[in-house]
Image (cartoon, rainbow over the protein chains, first blue to last red):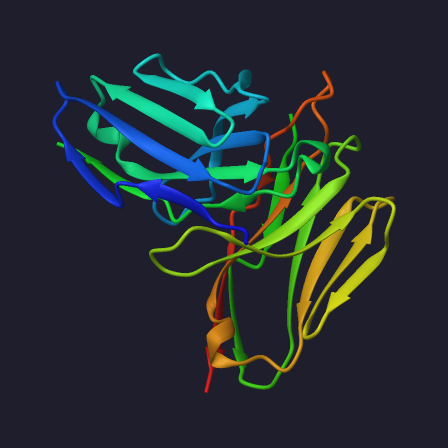
Length: 113
Length: 116
């Protein structure tokens, strides 16, 4: 089973709202990732968590705040977003010792109004 | 940082023919090269990958070749079928300098169209 689940599937939020995206995997993977994908573009790495610790932050604005409460769960907290932040937000996970074999979830389609 | 170039951006082939997508990378430290298939409204699906200690890998109708000296790798799909129509992304990755997990750098994608 290589399933990564993400909720919600779709999210519409105003620029003053606070919302959270959730990602879950039960494969025992110890690395988890957030990517952002704009229409007709490739995924772009945002954050990497390894053993529940943030190991990479690709200079993402502070209005995006990641959290890894445990090894199965990854959240992305959103606050004061801009319309240009509208995109598909993808979560992925990988086994720590084969860190690069990443499995993606279906994504959350975010629209900021 | 790593830079991955992918060609062509669109590829149209007749059903049953072969399709080839090519990528080049810039960072000689990259040692892992996956290919993803993304259908409309879905997340990327890992279809095949290759590591730098291997020159070729095959899985049924799909194969990947790697030339580490030239820093390029290719995806080959034989006997194409309508369900192969999708966007395909190549990517490059490697172990983070601290030994932890690393992210992937993706190519811009190839829209593969299988004509019936």
